[in-house]
Image (cartoon, rainbow, N blue to C red; front, side):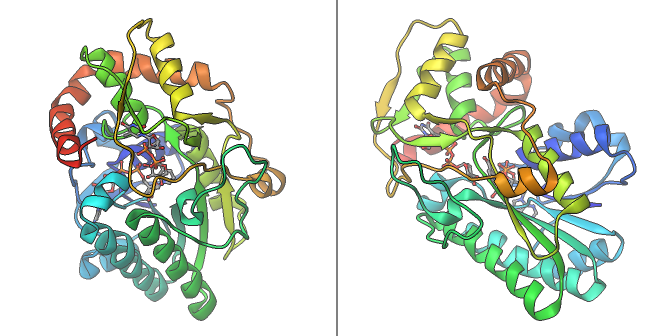
Length: 328
Ligand code: NAD
Ligand code: TDX
C-alpha cells in the first residue's frame, strides 16, 4: 500500500491505524516533508514501514512507487485554507498537478486508488438550517484550497469515466486528534493555553464545523477500500456540529482555564457552516463513529498535546509568526 502524505496529520494517523488494524498491508509512505510533514509522526513505526521522501508531482518517482504497490491512498496535499489565501501556488501545484501525476501512474499500472478529499468542495451551508451536503451536492468551493481540492476530485472522476481507473473518493468533515499541525483550529487553541497564551477566534466565532475524530475518518477509508463501489464518492462525518465559539469554550473548560479568548479579524470568504450527510457510508458500509462523544475525544486530544510538548513546541513559533503576517 502506497500512502501519499503519510507524514502529515491524517496520513500518519492512517499509517498507525493500518499497522494496528490491517497488518496484512506492507506500507510505503511518499511524503515531501513540507512544513506540515514530520518524520516524528512516524517515529514509533519507522521500522515497520518504508519511507520515501519525495514529491507527488515527480512523475518518474511516482511511476516507480505505484508500479511497486497494489493500492494507493492519496492524502498528500496543501491543506490549510489561510495559507491558500496568502499564496495559492503550492495548492494548485500539489493538489491538482500532484493528483494528475498520481492518476497517470495509476492508469498506466492499473492500480486501485482511494482519493482523500474534503467537504469544503461544496462551499458552505446557512447557519441554523437542517441542510447537509450529500454526494450529489454541486461543487461550489470558496477558497483557493477548496478550489484546488475540487479540481483534484474532478480529475479523479474524469479518469474513472474516461480511462476506467479503479478509484473511489471520500470527502470528510473537519478532523481532530493527535499529530494535527499547530496551525489548525483545535491544536492552535490547545497549545496556546499550554504555552500561557489565549485562544483566538476568527470574527464572531459563529461559524459551524462538523467534528470527526481522525481514527473514525481512517476507519471509513478502510471500509471504502474493502467494499466501496468503484467510481463512487462517500461523505464522512460524525454528525456532531459545533460553532467555533462552543469549541473554544469547551477547550477552556476541559483545560480548567478561566481566562477568556481573543477575537481576531475574520478569514476572508469564511465558510459559515459545513455538515455532511454520511448515510451512504453508514447504510452501505456500516460505518459508525467510535468517538461519538466529542467531549471525551477532545479531552484525550488535549492530553496528547499536554504529554507531547516536544512534538509541538518547535512548530508553534513559526506558525504564530505566519499568523502575524496574515493578521490573525
Ligand atoms: P497535512 O497538511 O497535515 O499533511 C499533508 C501532508 O502532505 C504533509 O505530510 C506534507 O508534507 C505532504 N505533502 C504536501 N505536499 C506534498 C507533495 N507535493 N508531495 C508529497 N507530499 C506532500 O494535511 P491533513 O490535515 O493530514 O490532510 C490530509 C488530507 O486530508 C488532505 O488531502 C486534506 O485535503 C484532507 N482533509 C483534511 C481534513 C482535516 O480536517 N484536516 C478534513 C477533510 C479532508
Ligand atoms: O485560530 C483559529 N481561529 C478560528 O476561529 C483558526 C486556525 C481557525 N478558526 C476557525 C476557522 C474555521 O471556521 O475555526 C474553524 C476551523 O479552522 P481550520 O482548522 O483552519 O479548518 P477549516 O478551515 O474548517 O478546514 C479544515 O477542515 C476541512 C481542514 O484544515 C481542511 O484541510 C479540511 O479540508
